[in-house]
Image (tube, one colour):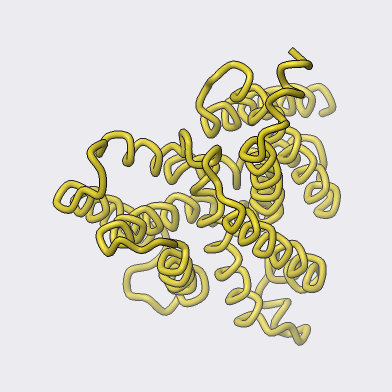
Length: 277
């Protein structure tokens, strides 16, 4: 098995998949802790469906790089939902549900009306579950993933204390001099970036798992914000790495394998948490 793995690692697309998978999972885990604590866990589904709809539009327009269209429009929806959600007449989960269902339906409709290939079912499956896209990454896409991942990590390092304050109590953070609106705007932008990146790894239907499971697993064992952040990142990276390796060796879908391992780890953490209480 090790010799087979070493042989696979000789191929650039395998190395690209591992690098991107680890980076995306790391960023998702950092962001997931904040979103879970702010009770925005479902935002991953909403924005991923938006990205799915925009990808369908990009396909109809025959864009060579759909990220140029998908990323800005997803960021716009993230700002609308996360930053200005309190000012909307349709708030919270209702707004997320409407945008999510609408974008998903319109995207699938466009893919049927203007098919870009002869395998519509394969295109839909790849976009929804990320079944093969992570193994077909180009060098330019890996570079984009690397840059965006470094930006997300840098944001959490530079604004760690402010994000911590906004996560737990926005009113207290505001009275302490924190620019809450700016922090929420930054969180909205990096949320959209992580969602778009994760589309290639697990597809639009499984993105929430990358955001939620590592955070919840860490919270079952630790009660410190810093410990939860660190352990969530470690869990996410290990699950992504093992999931990609297993999927390559056993020929299982990459995204589903990663999520299955996250579920297993969550079950283990749940038992550990019960034993420690």
